[in-house]
Amino acid sequence: MEPYMQQFQGEKNRISVIDWLVSIFVASIPLIGIVMLLVWAFSGDTPETKANWAKAMLLMTLIAIVFGVIMMVIFGSLFFWKDVYIM
Image (cartoon, rainbow, N blue to C red; front, side):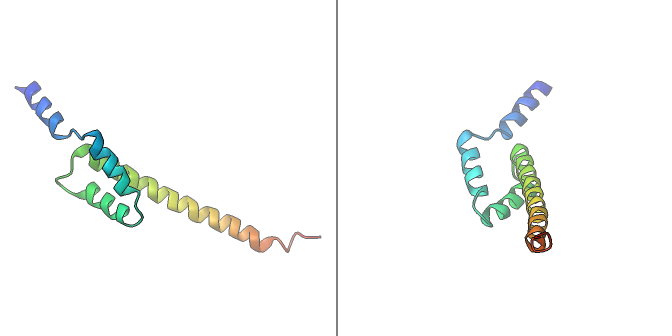
């Protein structure tokens, strides 16, 4: 009985290529994509693979934002320090 249940659960979590393409396209739209990633990540009726993907994308987005802010602070401070080192 257990192999049958595993096969059934595999079918439940199966997502087609078209569904993945639509998901990636929607996730790439600014603001709407973040909202949809939040919905997919924390909704109870989203397939597990898609929920895990959405959580990973949210984490990568957060890391990219933090990295971007750090780079802006570093290079922004260099912009203001340029007059100090001119001889």
